[in-house]
Length: 268
Image (cartoon, rainbow, N blue to C red; front, side):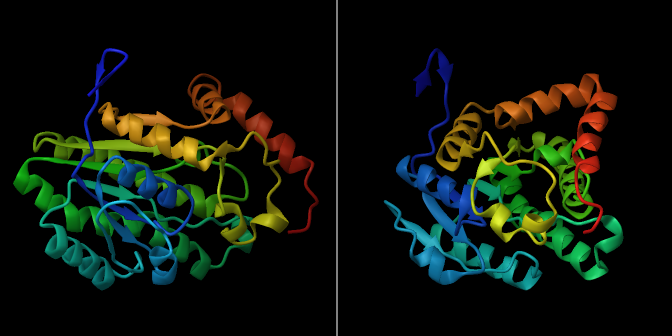
């Protein structure tokens, strides 16, 4: 297929495994891929929410907690048993956290790292060997603008996304010679339930939520970037502005962020 002179990969009949598929970006991606004719494996902890997601075409419900290697292995094994192989892995599952570093417990910090970093690691480690053997595959890593720009009150979340970025960029080079591609996605502020579920977010967040990108638009841009074979994508206008400011004027970014912190009440 060609759009505006660019050759696009077709996802028709491809097997796509998506983590965090019960809501937000993961849910929107599942719908978008299914509409293109992909066969989709849906992974999330809540099996009832996955069953409620009416998708066209063939799909598989594979409930799993991404922080538990045994459940990850089972979800991948069930997908392989049902479809025979996996063409696309979308590591989307993630949780948020908003608190001062001094107020963040070890358990809270570990929980964010286990989901946002180790969950993606477990799935990548489980799926990559099959892609390498078939010499074909695509990995989509849903990172964040906070994977390249840390913000105050986000130490756990930012650390998890920085770690995901490092692993992804290293793995991308390793997988390249096996004809396995990787797309790293860095969303800005997307209109999803993410902020409602992020721990301590509503009471602690100093940043105004505005200019939210509709989740359907975010999913469409991700699928389009994957079809074009892109390596990286930053979503939202504010996210792209932050990307360039961080590259060329990091001190300015710090001053902007500090302004929000100074305006915030001193109590957590």
